[in-house]
Length: 163
Image (cartoon, rainbow, N blue to C red; front, side, top):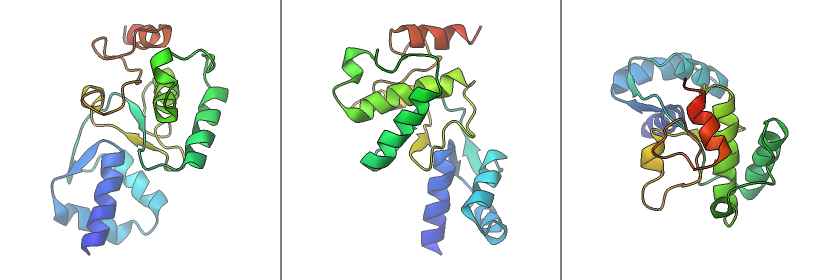
């Protein structure tokens, strides 16, 4: 039982939620018999969790190197910017590169949780971009927040898209 709550809580967090009512969560567990159904429930932002409008797509820090490479490749093939022109500070670590590419991909698509922040389980939908940029967290994340987005054309475009 606690393993199921842990798993479902992780799925909620993946989409910007924090479980606040375990009883409500159990109703979902009883009806959502597959991960696909569970993800569908998360898209409705059920009342048993507190939901935050996330500002960025981030790489899951536990993602495998294979998943990382495939995800970045897909995003590079389906975005407007040239992935060979990344900010220098985002090229030393493949995870920073992935954060940059994937956050541009998500921002370009209007910032919707589904499907842009779910690449075969390789991404998480972060709670806030600012908290992700603090300390040892990801620092190569393009957002619409002018205080935290990288000072690049992609960062500028993300801010402009807000209006």
